[in-house]
Length: 188
Image 1 (cartoon, helix red, strand yellow):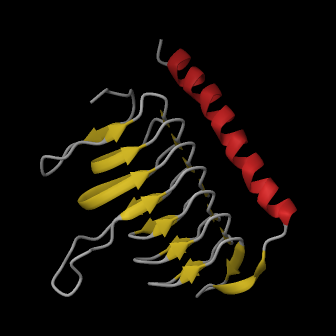
Image 2 (tube, rainbow, N blue to C red; image 1 turned 60 degrees about the horizontal axis):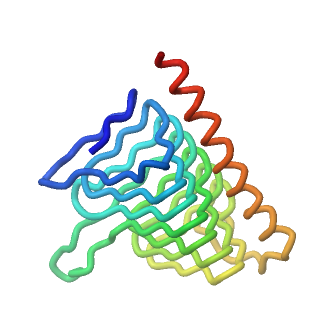
């Protein structure tokens, strides 16, 4: 396990976070337990990823923006599968989001301050609007926009919206490189 300055990386129950060497983890983050973070992903300032009771898996080039909280739930009687948190590649998770025991497919989008609850699913190229709450077991199809508390489908996303999300992924991947350099320079 490589140490990262200013980042709390905490093993628990015999499980240690596995973070790809090319992932950017900003100072102030706390990453606990059975977490895996893929190549080119970025976890921004003051995020908490707590896999103390089950697993968190994050794919490649995914970004989790400042202040977000990610957690999971363990298998239990009546729910032997539990609620792992599974996040695909090229996912955008906005600032201050709460993402718990759900699945976000490749290129999914979670808006600022949104909440995603256990066993909910966000399809590929789908967008959960800022401030929305996707309740337990709700399933967003591919290329859908959902909003509200509780979230409901508003419409299918047009191609320009999909393209905009892909631009966002590229932006965060590039910006993470600049922040990694700035953090390294500040620590010299």
